[in-house]
Image 1 (cartoon, rainbow, N blue to C red):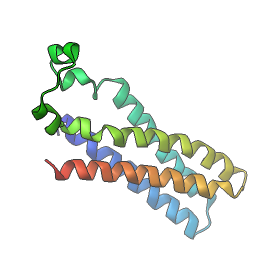
Image 2: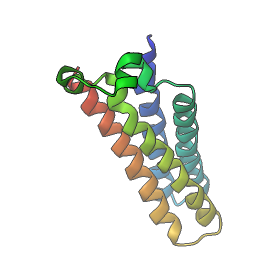
Image 3: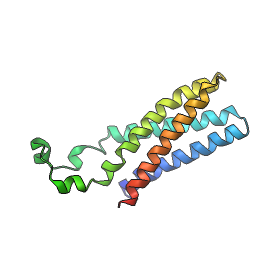
Image 4: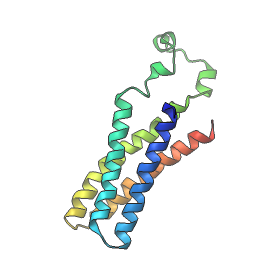
Length: 140
């Protein structure tokens, strides 16, 4: 399994396992499962932070040093955006999803109504990242 495959398959497992656990927690009215699902979004955010901080999306991976220094981009470079550059917004949405998961856990723990809003926002942001990855895969 190459590096790019790992970067788009692992988030899918996090997203859908978290969504299934949260849905089960809502249907069965079990707070523990909703919290575990939100923790899944936090783990996805930690993974996204790890990937971003380790330089998987650095511009130097996609452009030559001369292009970076001169800031001259040819049209063909703009038209051919690399796969990793296309999935970068997904990883940003995973980070924001993790940020929304923290108040979701807190409010769910305290049995407050805003927990539903934060769970839904966290899930939607993760799904947005999923669809960004799917869109990038379709252009390969």
